[in-house]
Amino acid sequence: MAEIARVEVYVDGQSTPYKVLEKGPFQVQIDPADFAEGDHFLQVYVYYTNGDFHQYLYRFSVARKNQTFAGYLNRAPVGAPIEVILIDPSEETVAAARPNPFVHGILPVLLFLLIAGVAAWFAYMGDKSVKDYVENIEPIAAAAAASESQGEAKAGGGAVDGATIYAQNCASCHGPDGQGQGDVFPALAGNQNLADLEMVMDVVLHGRPGTAMVPWGQQLSDEEIAAVINYILNSWGNNFGTVTPEDIAARR
Image (cartoon, rainbow, N blue to C red; front, side):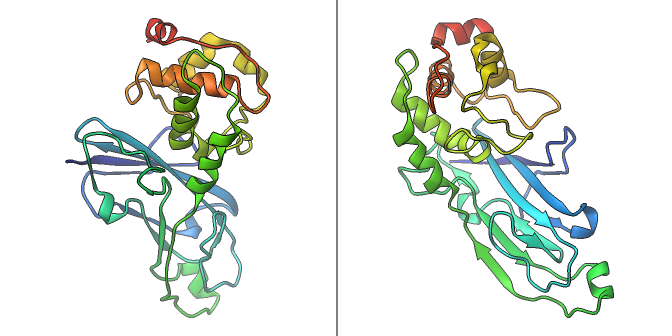
């Protein structure tokens, strides 16, 4: 069994970590007083002692209104400081082999919200403290799993494997249907930039500094990267060709 080596938390795609945790409890406090009104997101990167790597995405919105409850949906308003438990305690160790979250029924995005108190501005407005405990799991995995049935990937990297790898590692940001999420996570469906295969390989392998795109070269093999790229290049109406594992190896 491998244990968590560290957890890095980034806010809104910034290049500097909001928090780095090297021991439990793996959680951070979100205070709406620290954020502008509107939508925000946390990217959580979990590094294990066996070299494995997992990525999680938490989206929330800040609304400075007379509220006494932090909702539990994906873009729920946050009206008081909350503790976001980044890692389910039951998953703080992983097997040496990366589990398939759909085979084992593990949701790739776990969101546990603990209402910890009331922010100073919130208290100033005269509202009572909030002591409710909210525990919810966002079913992104279910939506991501549906993407496997939408795959139109061509041969060259493995259509089935590519769909699975995409669902495990990419769908939470770029969407199970490749539609993306605004400017932070660009759409992949119909994206003409995908015609530049060298650029696509470089971005998947090495990430894109200053953006929310992380490198996958250390986590995925040449075969896996070729498979997921080919899935993206030829799904959702895309028709941008294929790459091979040898192409990936040459770009490392």
